[in-house]
Picture (cartoon, rainbow, N blue to C red):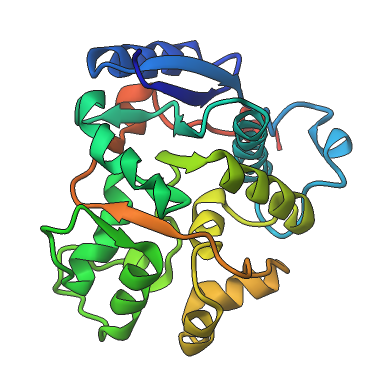
Length: 259
């Protein structure tokens, strides 16, 4: 059977739907569309009033809630794990190459397959021959490094963990259930990319780098670390990257020009 990847897509984004389905099929994935929540719908704020918060915009809130809906589907299913991607994902490696990584679910809870996450491994100078490296290890090693603007991976992604990327990852059914509960507690008050990584970080390591931006940002959004954290890992070579331009352009607030 082909590996099943669930992709998040708004009803009106048909161009993105065609884009991600074609790319997945070409690399040997089966797909299931998860209807994304539209943060710009007229009733969004009222319908989700008890599940949103913080200073982020409705599009970012809706993205978070859409991922949470996908985790709930995985948690309620029979499969031991689920694959999740967004609809601007470009697949770089065939699905058949996932097998040795997915076998590591006997010791990991969530695996990140995207290019942006690998930046932490590169910046920290961790062994590129290791198929999987712990998120906590990679992030902590990167944060222990002095800031080096000359490094090709340097930027806010390295310095602040602003957007490591939830564009393609896999998680166990048990991890999905934990994230559903965490999402209900924290509410959609920060971007899902940073939130997912944060839930994989050791509390002592968060405190050690408490002066870095994201720990303060998380506390400001009233997001709490997960104790114990998920055991997450980053692959050695990316299976996917984000290409919003090829997917049909960035998703924007259709009402912005009217405000």
